[in-house]
Length: 193
Image 1 (cartoon, rainbow, N blue to C red):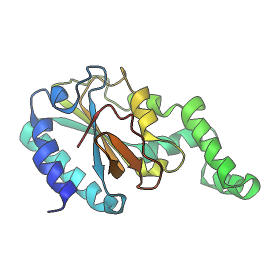
Image 2: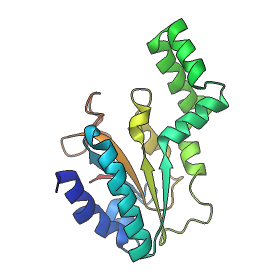
Image 3: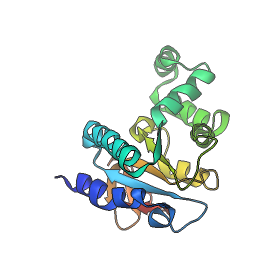
Image 4: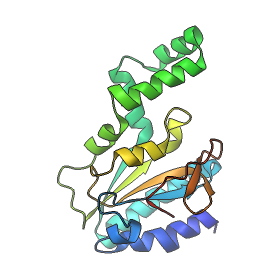
């Protein structure tokens, strides 16, 4: 069993099975979420294991798990601004990669805020004792948007236990390097599994 899979099954899953997982994943009442870190190259295996975890939590623990894809949120935001795949390809050709990345970042930060798109996908009848949110496909945001920003912006908007599945590397006790490439962010306040 790999280190991340062991952490998933032996550390994270027992906490999520609790009647109220919030105290086990976060010390902050307005940030009831945690980060589950795994190597970026394990993305497809983690997706499979996350689906199995969802099934176990729903069938054995009576939880309702909502998976929110950051890739889907990003695609919806870009489409809403008329920036589908063809428009982005044209922009990259016309203005260059860096300007296109900056445009995508601006869309997700200002015009179609990513935190609002995520919060809107949480069930309106969500119950902290029953519901769990998995925030997945964070790698789709690379290199246009840092997940540390997303977590800070979700503060107070998420009332149910949530886990961000984070492709990256641990850097010290509370630092993470997104996709193992970008400089480490050391301002992650949620618990890192």
